[in-house]
Amino acid sequence: MIKKMIRKLGKSGIEVSALGLGCWAIGGEFWDADDNPSGYGTIDDNQSVEATKKAIELGINFFDTADVYGAGHSERILGKAIKGHRSEVVIATKFGSFFNEGTKTADFSVPKISPGYIQRACEASLKRLDTDYIDLYQLHVWSIDKDKIDSVIDTFESLVKKGLIRTYGWSTDWMEGAQVFVKNSNCSAIQHQMNVFINAKEMLELCENNNLAGIIRSPLAMGLLSGKYDSSTKLPENDIRRKEPEWLIYFKQGTPDTEFLKKLKSIREILTSNGRTLAQGALAWIWGVNERTIPIPGFKSVQQVEENAGAIEFGPLTKDQMIEIDKLITRVPI
Image: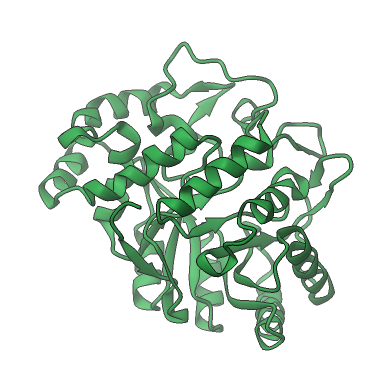
């Protein structure tokens, strides 16, 4: 086990490792209604289970998934991997889109947020995860009508009272909606995008001012900050990074965006200081921003888990290093 670095899920008081793991990639292939890839390509389920178990062995206890990842497959694999370790881990999952496990397809066009749907989605996630409760249950859509936010909150509270979930949050970068949600609820976390390229100042302030955890999505810029990809990279057709949805800014047709590669080149030396790998430096930057941040990099292999977990041994970047990075790059606001 590596040294411990602990965070709390906001006002819930639930303690988690400062590094979590995102389980989108281990869901494998699935497709949207237009037959575009929505996963990270081919996976090996046995390897996914082995990697998850290795994470637990190394002291990582926080795993974030969603019912739609792999059209239910990610939850099933996570449930299998944590069997016998449920009391040791904190599970976060999400809902908000209809999907079909049989066809591996998902419909992201209309948010599914009625009280009845949320109840059914929660119960279905519990079955796939093979557990009696979900630690952190999250709304998983970018935005909804503001007049429906209270209904979602009421349903979350009902699930808490029933013992099906411990606490709840929202995965969104929509500041206006997040403000309403936070103001009117007992939520514990906002999951949002942030990395060394992306400025999330307002969302971090919202978390700080309301005693919330900031669960950091895309901490490695969908793999760009792993150092594995360059201008010659061409990812396979079944990888979402070939799809180019509007929000996917790091890759263009499966190749890293040239502007981000230039920025990465300018800060690589700082991120890899003191023997860190590039990915470890990117995680160290996130910890250097704010003590509420919990990055959740994705993974497919034991090697990736070990590398990410190793970042904890180094801890955050120094204040001087953070200032130097600020001088070298201009961040994209969200």
